[in-house]
Image (cartoon, rainbow, N blue to C red; front, top):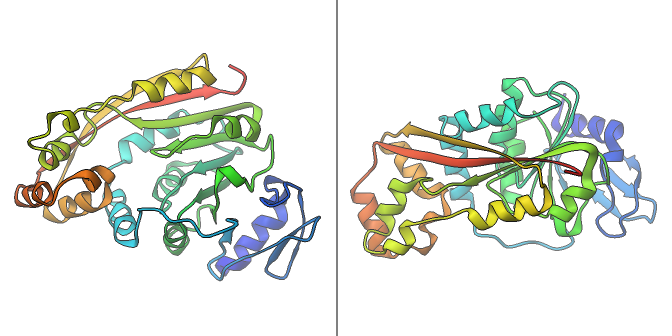
Length: 284
């Protein structure tokens, strides 16, 4: 089945998951390749079967090279132990409706499918390049370009919201979740990619340190019965994977040219993945 036909089938069966980002009204029909709301706003499917929901183009720092590097190192297994732990904590694995917020190039959601996740799966990102990459490689979910600030998703429709290394909008999460729904958020911890951080910021001790305390506190303000799962492991690197690691992380955005050069001259043989997985339930 062609990707656009697969997407049309999904939209026909799961139109209730979406709302018009312009007027917030439900979508009423899929006509040819166009999704149309009751007020006549039209959103067209691409040939790859993706939908573009943004009112205007969005600029972000995640360029094609960065996204391709993230895809490559994800496929090599950098995030696999983390994603396995996420999978274990999804409550409805067989028939749930899952929304991956800030899905990037799609690797996390696709890995979950390979672990056994089933149901209605939607991944979205504000980056068009990321969603094009996801749709090019994966048919495991419905992919769209969207912004939570102008949400194209309907209320009370999702069993699980995944929020892995991406910004949150807890008011919107509350609206989107079913009554017994859950949010699984993954945030870096103090030693996340610490070896690379030390290379980039060799002479800047303050930039070698990181705290996620404020992020966890914000999560707990919205989910009083938060479960926190620490995850830590070491991932081996060869020269190619080190180059991809350098490209894929925002850690280098604040580094000087000298810092980046020093890192390139001192390739790592392994790197630490140190994160906290936060799990909250609606109404808790």
